[in-house]
Image (cartoon, rainbow, N blue to C red):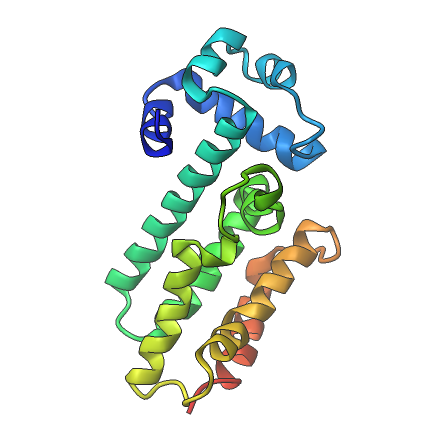
Length: 198
């Protein structure tokens, strides 16, 4: 069974959603390598046989989880692109979305941004090469073409726009920031945009 078929098949039942939810929490709380299939069985209340049927192994669970979260983020970013006309508004909306997700679903953000996926999904590209991160860089590149952002090395511009916000997300997840991230949105956005705007 190929990976795409496996991922689609895993999305078809409520039981697989239970497995992915349990795995997400376990992977982010105790780490991928410290989580066993019996741990996932216990946390999800899904039988061992069903887990192996849908996912084949623990790596299959991690791969399905990663792919489903990347697809979800890609859909969010595509919606932002379709509802905001300027790079300024798109980039700010992305940061706002990431801040909201961090507050509402911290395990998702921990898994997506700070797990070392390539250590346990052996053929996985770095998360910064995934489609959502490409979309973020494309938003900045469009801003350059439209004359909103000054001409600088694109990866430097994207890092300037989003890097500070990603660092704040890490600080929030690490418990360094006490206040909810949306309280920092205006301030970090002003700093980020001023660093690249014409």
